[in-house]
Length: 279
Image 1 (tube, one colour):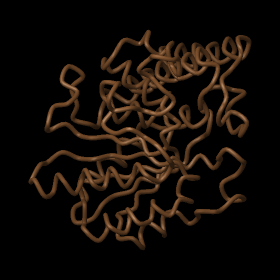
Image 2 (cartoon, rainbow, N blue to C red; image 1 turned 60 degrees about the vertical axis):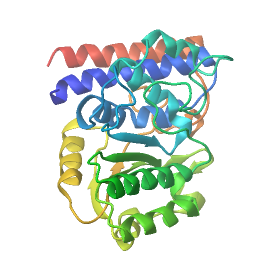
Image 3 (cartoon, rainbow, N blue to C red; image 1 turned 60 degrees about the horizontal axis):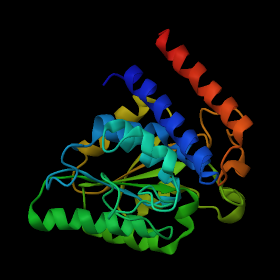
């Protein structure tokens, strides 16, 4: 897909996020919206996947380490064809397959269940090691939040990945600067993120605008071409990206919009989509 086509698709993914958390009256829109572009790029351009065969052995794997941003993953999976888009209206409903965190047993396209922050990267490292040991050529991607970097397990997994030179692993850090209680740098600063990963023998790729498709395309190409060490893409993003009143607003880390807020959000996204159609 072209960058413009990907941008248009990301708008639809954002609509899916807002629709899901509104229907659930709960959820995590802020971090889902900041990562909507990378979800879109991964599932529509980067990864070797097939919605008709979600468990094919040679598929690339994705682990959502910041599992609370499941609305973003679900919206990308739905628009990619893993399940009906209408299912997004069932987010967090009792008996539905789209729960607050991804569940591998119930949702097509989910490669790992998400739990406590910090655990997903360990799962991804295990998958990457398994591929190396079995001489399989699939790649493994995992998305972490910047607040999640405060978890010690992240660095244990990173130390192992760097030591084992897992160049089939691509870690992505959604550096939107905010976590549930406020600014990441004020609560427990993970900075400098790039130097920390470099110390663990990662190839570090810094992206100044992680909501820009051309920048993501360049970063993922560099990661794919890097041999002998794992890669990390540290991308600066805007929390709540695409919805005017949610952007850079910490209170939208974890709550659903009411009917009036939902209407404003969808209008914002409709206008964004219309603007892209004029290009």
